[in-house]
Image (cartoon, rainbow, N blue to C red):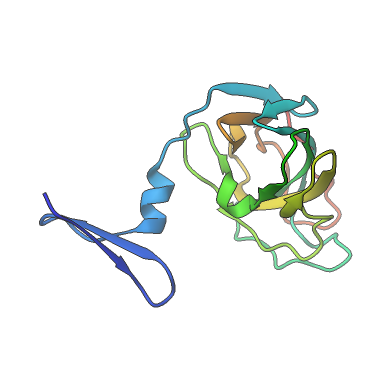
Length: 180
């Protein structure tokens, strides 16, 4: 069985196995199921290798009530923003790339889409020296009836709950927090 790997001009990967259709690397990554060996709730600390990681808060928004308005998500979707704290408890520098190391999956194992959100608070991306910490928000676009959401990092899933029950679509509407 021959496998062909092609790099396209935009940096995506295409895979072909024998006479099968070509599948983009992005689609293959989306089909991967997270192998989760530990689950923790919001506010709990997980030790992952030399990092202490916790999701300290989660909020929902349609993007219009922000200091700088974000483009509204598609009908039936909402932004989910998770505040993450990472502390390096090891003796070596840690390098973090949230888009490469962290994903958000729903109860069906579907990977959620990252979102560009102009007013994220802080960033966990970059290096964390020993004994130091970084805090920042990560953003995804999720269906407003998504359930069983888990942020996965290093084999540990942070249980975020679901976003159903909120009423997006109006700047005056108070969005509910995550239910656990």
